[in-house]
Image (cartoon, rainbow, N blue to C red; front, side):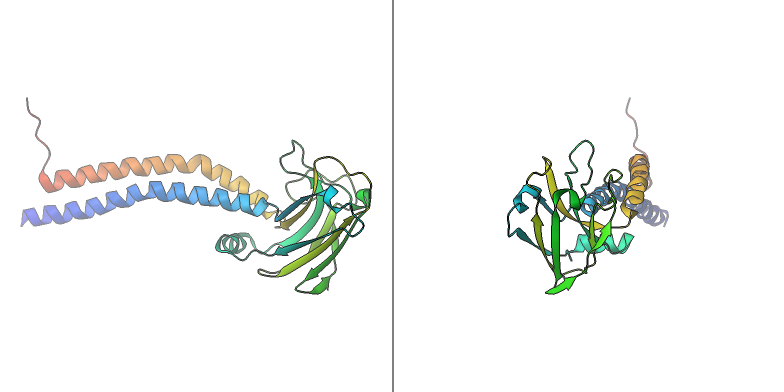
Length: 219
């Protein structure tokens, strides 16, 4: 009877140990996924060099608003975005900033699912320095799966070097707060995961000693 009790106790303790061990890879996976989600939320959907629009006819960009699982997960966490069309330097520049559309003679016409959409003037989007101008770009609304066509023309004969036209999601500043919180959690979670790993090993060793007795040391 005592042997059965010991074995049942060992099994329960062993399961607890496995549960603690599972925290480590699950924490690492969750942290990596959250980091990838934040990066996706801040990544432009379209990035095209401004000089490619310096033609009389301009150029038409086509965009299908994302509707994949990762996008849905981000929207569920911080809400659905609107979208921006912004002339700017790339985010890889040391000080990413926008350009006033009037400075480069930017003209746009946008259709969503074949219907013309009114663009709203906006100031500096998230991830960019404070705008130098009254208007830095334009905002429009669209839902997952919508097909968006943007007719773009740049009238200026010269445009700043290393500048692009970006079409990017606008999460209303919520990504910055999310990223800050994730950064703090990222500093703490590894220690908690490591502690769970150690506790799990201890519980498994305890389960073994309960089931088969404490190993005897030989002289």
